[in-house]
Picture 1 (cartoon, rainbow, N blue to C red):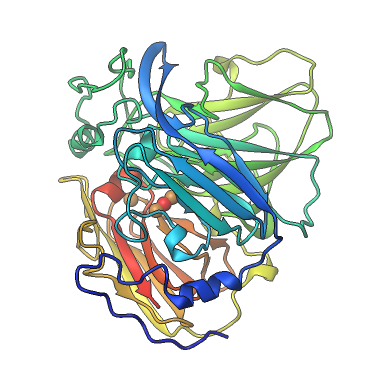
Picture 2: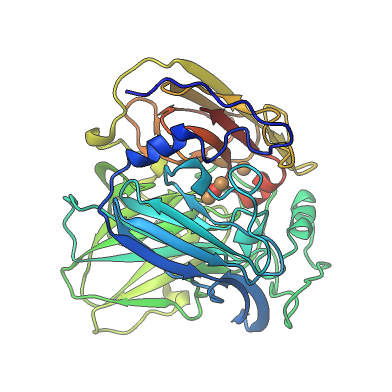
Amino acid sequence: ALAACTPTPPATGQTNRILPTDPLINDYETRRDSTGKTVTKTLTPAPFSTTMAGKKLTTWGYDGALVAPTLRGTVGDQLKVTVTNKLSEPTSIHWHGLALRNDADGVPGLTQAAIDASKDYPYSFNLPHPGTYWYHSHVEMQRERALYGALIIEDPQESLKYDKDWVIILDDWLDGVTGTPDEVIKELSKGMASMGGMNHGEGDGGMVMGHMLMGASSDFLGGDAGDVAFPLHLFNGREPENPETFTATAGERIRLRIINAAGDTAYRVGVPGQKLTLTHTDGFPVQHTEVDAVVLGMGERIDAILTIQAGYTPVLALAEGKAQMTYGLITTGSGTAPGKDALPKTLSGNVVHGGQLTADPSVNLPSKSPDRTHELRLTGGMANYDWGINGQRFDMTKPFEKAFDLKIGERVEVKFINDTEMWHPMHIHGHTFQIGTTGARKDTVIVRPKETVTVYFDADNPGQWLFHCHNAYHAERGMMGVFSYL
Ligand code: C2O
Ligand code: CU
């Protein structure tokens, strides 16, 4: 049941069509669960130096580290994060996957003003629903420099049984080294062009990419053949030369919370010779599904249960369509760690992506026919490296001009129609949609070349909400849009 309301017309010169102080938005806030508890944290985006592929380099991260703090709370806790901006440019934090009040969504120019260099900014909201989420800067390509971290929301009514949970964040290292996405884009737009001439603005090491591998054709995503790939993929901030090692006891059930934070890489994740039981995607429960491997597009999350066997167990993350990998190790304290070169190079068998799973019936949207349909054609191509929605390149300086209108209370049908030769992980802010009528509840879904994926959501969180491809380079080059309603 949703209150009727009259939208506030934008005042002259006002950037936001909808003011965060709008009584309706506050009204929604008061209806969110509250435990009365507060989780307080300061996050400091700052430059730091690290070593990658044997070279010293400078990049940006939260609290000056490659792996940002994992934030944890329980549904209904108030999360109070003070951002202390130690960068030389403005920043923001977006809480990926959470249906927050609109002014907490962290999109400069749309839901807030950017946080200027050397300024503080308080985010404060109630954690709305349980699951595996993440946070990242939503200013241009800053996420690509390592400004991202995990956000885990515990469920007081959790029914899944497990002994431990571990966060696994995967990232490709294309541009974070350089901070000059335009150069990467320029090179990407040349398709197979050599990266040899790139000049890296920061870092003593200059270019860390020792050699370049061509993007091989992917058997799963239909090929990303135009994309140039680099040999560096991180598993919890670590290179394969120095893998993350978890300790467990044989027989323990571990909940793996896998997050793909990469800008340009899907990962195929699996444990050779063992099954994973997929339990959640993008925070929401699915009907448990046993697989040999799971593919995560950029921005997606998968929770999986793994039963630990004695000895060393590798968790492989293969860069989909690229002949590259990263991994972590689990040890029970016996046996010898396998070296990187001893690990399998493929994961096959039953391989799915989150968009192919079936929702746990407890999270199905109530049955209702759609009140409105938006057809969102994913358009553009590698030739000019221009990407868009319905042929339009999004202009972040005028985000409201071509907003897609919704009305509060509507069941919205969105058809992502991929007209391109590339695949796109499409993300909607502030809502969790359902794929079809029984598919998974998700906030980010892979749309393969020439495929149409139809999703539904309820317009129950008024505001202005970005949607975009979670390939950082496609988004930056225009594959974005805004849903707007009050
Ligand atoms: Cu992770 Cu606009 O998103
Ligand atoms: Cu894309």
